[in-house]
Image 1 (cartoon, rainbow, N blue to C red):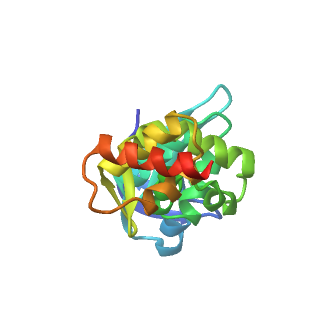
Image 2 (cartoon, one colour; image 1 turned 30 degrees about the vertical axis):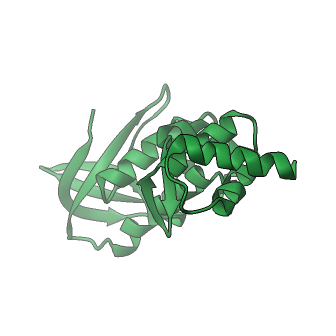
Length: 192
């Protein structure tokens, strides 16, 4: 399994580059970010994912292991193929995708070509458990007790929006997961 390549760019295509590694040319489908910076003759390091199918053997390349990891998460979702996942990483940054998954905001993902509303919701639903206990605070994803409270409320049947809204409304001086859940439930019982 090929997971990393370092070599000289021999050719740049519409959505791929050809890299010469020890006199062997590899065709690697890459994100728009890599494609825009690529120059023939440039030495490049690419983290790769080798896709093996019955009728094809393809390489997909990334600028970092983080991109490679996100790509692998995206293709684990039913209905998301490698080219759609690569396109997602070309359009959105990793932290934007993670933020959308954590917050349950599928609308961010629908901006990506090839991903409709139902597919975006499926991505959020299927990848949500990989970010269990994480929360987003001013653009940074961190482990918090609020993430646990959010998960508990959603697990109790409240919508993601309801859980998010009630978490914003509880007293900031309340500490501890159990106390926060209790405060949220009290607010929710008054509203619904």
